[in-house]
Image (cartoon, rainbow, N blue to C red; front, side, top):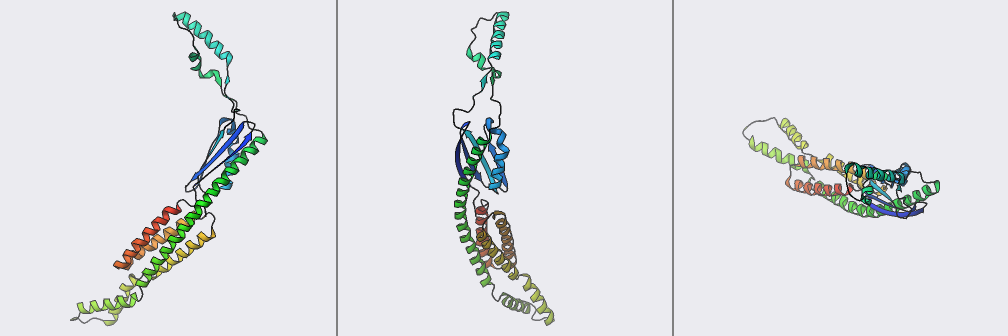
Length: 289
């Protein structure tokens, strides 16, 4: 089991200088990859994205690639354009009768005289070095996700154990429920109708029907099945976040039905605790890959 939260960093020496790569991830329903690259390396973004998608399955992943050397490629200066600009300024001063010295900041305001470096695809050696650094960063990120995932696993196992104990408490309180509830119902009906002659067979039939409507045996069986599957899924490992989320929804459904059908104050209090624990589990599994 892995968390979707992690960080990893690596670097490589290339013909562009030192390339540093940082990989960060956080929880997300699907795999969402965004890569931030300097212009000089933008041509290899598809290859880097493919590597990330092969190594990770879920999470919002942000990859930042930066150049830390002196070979970043500063913009080139268009001298011919600067000379022409100066001539135009001198002509403008003469035509308008402006008496002002031409200063450097006049040229800096003209962005066109600075041409960015052309985007050239890195050679095969540099690409291999950068891809190796990316894999290194992802491995460190993944290691952090495994470490955090172990903590989440321990917490989930502890909490699902509490769910199982609460379910047993409900089950124990419903022992002999059908027999006891039927007897009480018949007693109440008999007292209410003590001076009225009723069909004994029909009375028993109605009592059984009303009692069956509040029976929660099936819900408890399904709840136990879901908790057992939840445990097994955690044990199996891998990318289990979505399956655990589905099982949790089913457990919540059964807990809600138990609460509605039981019509018992003590059981209602237990199901409140049970659903509160399920909500805590839900918060945790949002961060599981």
